[in-house]
Length: 280
View 1 (cartoon, one colour):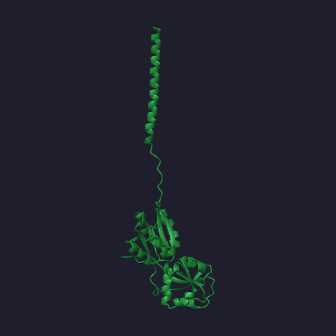
View 2 (view 1 turned 90 degrees about the vertical axis):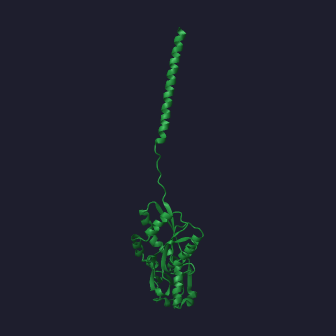
View 3 (view 1 turned 30 degrees about the vertical axis):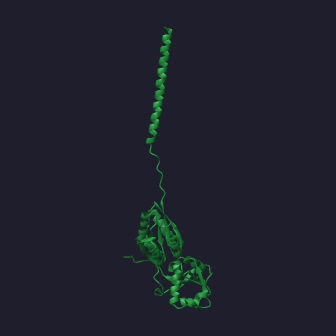
């Protein structure tokens, strides 16, 4: 009889222990099932990077336009490379990352369109400019016209390399039409882009240089001696185009359109550019 009572107690204790372990297991299982229901913290996506290749003469205006655009398009970040239009054209041809191209001449844009690297439907004339002759601000040289570059006092003249720098191309056209290109050959210092011309004149390394009106306006260390007659050179037009291999065509289209809107045009005008007539 005593053994029966002990067996009964043992059985009761075993049952209670089993029930306790079962309850603990259920609680743990419920917690594990509830965890996945909690929404994971969302991470902010990185902005899309748009690669813009722009003519060197656009450096100042693009530095103001960039933060203005990004402030209203926080999902985009502009990565801009500056250089001569010819050099930038070569970079696009060689496969460098590029979503938009802004050239200082139509020649480079047309060639990229012909090679299928820019769609003609996604091009437009953006702004125009003027060609000017500049000398150091403290220069005492009597230079009031391009013909004065022939004077003995003018020993060095900086211009962009005509084969790759549009400003140099326009300068060659103008000086050739004035009949003084050949005579000035010994005086020329050729540069990689128009901004280098400006730097050479600012520092007094040359006696004169030929740049765009907007370049001259950006410096307090040079003065304009003469403005080229527009009949002596091709129209100075800055076309913009979207590359056909852009990885972000939608965003590139947004920037392309924005740069042609009144807000952007006002900034271009502020820096001395003139609005181009839109292509029909």
